[in-house]
Structure formats: structure tokens, C-alpha cells
Length: 306
Image 1 (cartoon, rainbow, N blue to C red):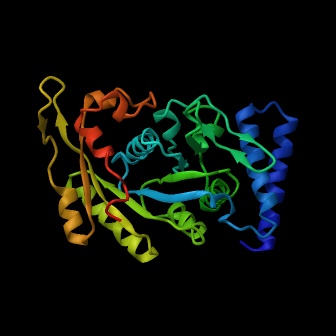
Image 2 (image 1 turned 90 degrees about the vertical axis):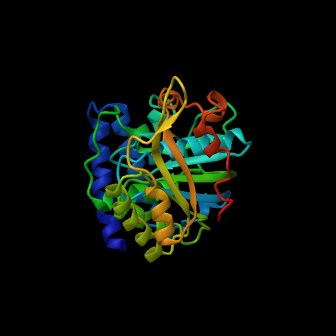
């Protein structure tokens, strides 16, 4: 975006902010307008995109070419597991049209705040070892839709990466939307000056999911993203009575994909009704269900196959 385009965006956004402040707009909408205004005003300056990420030791992307495979569940449980292991963790939810991380961590009623240094993420625990940023915190309710074109999405993602204070954290996990579109490209463009450890690619066993996820692998290779490995989610169903795992879908799609593209296969994660009950509670399977098959997966170091 050149200076002329930046000024045009700033004019539109500042006008929206003025209208919002002069009318009876609800506070979440006003916060969103201020959030955008703050970014566009800063975008007229030369920004070092890596400034706010200097204190981040590891950056992990969670990707998939297919929607509904459980990326956000994998992202949140991975973050909670790392926190339980003593690390300081951040989650950046860049799924702007379907932000589910606040729901999964039971943070839907929380707000982001601004300081002189930038935007302060929401903390999921009193010790402030797990910090979260999502557009879900800026919406009036979880039912509100974000109807934005690509440039506006890109600007918001840039702000998440440049204006949020990700300070002194061991892992930043970036939960992405499905596909290989604007959001993914924007994330990678703004991580050029930051060491990204790579991507965890999530699929389900079915052939139709594997086919879409194969395109995501191709995207990673074209854009130079290192693939840490592939996770096969919803791989079987764990009976709540006898704990036997049954393949209700096809089996082995993730393993077959990893062999095809020659990247490590990380784990199979079954459907477990007990884990499903944790969906909106923000609890780690390592604490609540330490002996479950799912917990065994998240006990592993995500970078051991790097």
C-alpha cells in the first residue's frame, strides 16, 4: 500500500470513528473503529513489523486447506499444554470471519485494552502465561459477522502482528482460517523479518479433506513455510464406556498424505466426548483428562520433528 492509499484509508477510517463517537454506537463497535484508526494513523510511518515480536522465541502456524477439521481446537489445546509445561504462550486468531478461540478458551466476555506501547492482549489465566488476541474481542456478540474485503482483513492482521504487545513469550501460535488466501499471505509477508519455526498442518482422515489439505502443503512450499508435520484429527471415535477407539470415518488419510509429500506425521487425535465437554471451558486435557488418548498427543514437544 503506497502513501496515497494509506491516506485514503486513514480518511475513511477517521470519518467512521467520528461518526461512531457522535452517535449511539455500542462500545465494542467504537473500540473496533478506534482499533482500526490507531493502526492506519501509524501506517503513515515506517513500521518495523518485527518490533512487537522481538520477545517471541518461537512462532508456529496452524494451517489447513479444509474448514471444520479442528484447527482452533488443536491451536488452543496445544497452547494450554505448553502453558501447563511452564511456557509463556500467545495465541493469535487470524480467522477474522470465524473467530472461535475466545469461545474455546471461555473468554468471550473479555476486552482488549490499549496502552502507550500498543494493544494489550487478553490473558486467559491470573499468572498471565497465556495471552490471546482475536477480532472476537472487538465484536458486539459472537453472532456478529465480519463482512470485509481482502484489504481490510489484511490491515487488521498487520495490526495484530505490529501493535499487539507479545512480550517475552516462548511460543506464539497463529490460528489461521481454511484455505490459501489473503490472510495467509499477509501473515507470511509480515513474518519475513521474524523467525517462523513452521506450520502444523491439520487434516481429517477422509479423502475429500486430504485433497484440500494437499493444496495447503503446496502453498507452504511455494511460500517457503517449513512444515513441522501433519496431524490427523477426528481419527476414530473413543467410546465413553469402554474407551475403545472405532474408525467411524475412513482411516489413515493423514499418514498417507505425509508419506506422499514426505513430511513428518505428528499424531492421530480421536474424537473423544469427554474432550468435547471441555470445548468452551478453556481447560487443558493434560489437567482434566491426563490419561486420555488425546492428552498423550499434546504431551509431545511440537518442535521435536523440526
